[in-house]
Length: 285
Image 1: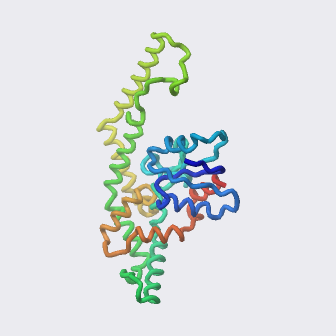
Image 2: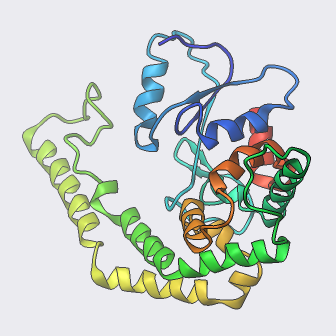
Image 3: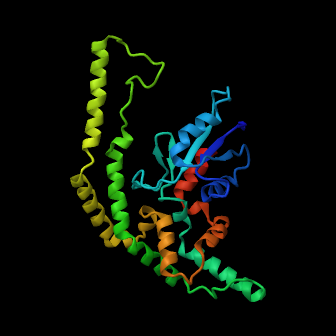
C-alpha cells in the first residue's frame, strides 16, 4: 500500500460511504495543504489499518486524524464538540446520518425534485410535492418516538460494555507489550504482577450484572421521557441516525427514499451549522 505524504484523515467505510463524502465537504474550502482522506473499513480495525498504512513510512512526524461515528461508544457532552476517544475523534451526533436528518433540508430536496418533474415530464419522480416542513418534522419525531425504548436499552447495554471484560481483556504482560521487560524478572515478582492482572480482569467481569443494567435503563428512561428532550430535538443527537432512518421508511413507505436524499443532502448541507464539524475543519487546518 502506498503512503501519501502530508496530512491524512482516516475514516470508516469505503469511498462511497457517507463518512468519506462528508469529510470531503469539511475540507473543500481549505485553500492549501488539503489532507488525503483514507477510508479504513470497520471502526474495530482502525488501529491495525493505520499501523499497516504507515508500516513502510520512515517519517516519524505523521500528521493524521482518525474520525468516525460516535455510535454508543461515548455520551455526548454538554458542549457541542468533537468527542475524543483514545486517539480518535468522534462525531458529536451519533453518526453521520444524524446530521442529514434535517426537516428543512428534506423539504428542500422534495421541492427541488418535484419542480424538476414539472419541468421535465420524463423525470421518474413519483412522490409529488413536499408535504411541508411541519409534516416532515412530525415524520422524524414519530419515528424517533417509536425507537425510544429500543434506544434506552441500547444505551444501557453501552454502559455495561464500557465496564465489561471485552474492554478489559486479560493480557499476558503488564509492561505494555512484548519487548518491554519488567523491572524484576523473579518468579515471585512476576507472579505478583500476574495476580494483579487477574484481579483487575475479574473486577471488570463482575461489573456486568442485571442490577447495573437495570440502573442504567432507569436512568435513560427518565432522560428520554423528559419534555425538554423532545422539545429541543435531542433525539437527533442521542438516537442512532441509521435506526431513525429505518423507522422513518417503515412508517411512511410512500415517502421519499432517504438514501437518495442523503446523496443530495451531502452536497447541500451547511457545515457551519454544526460546531463539531467546524472544530474538525479547524483541527485539520
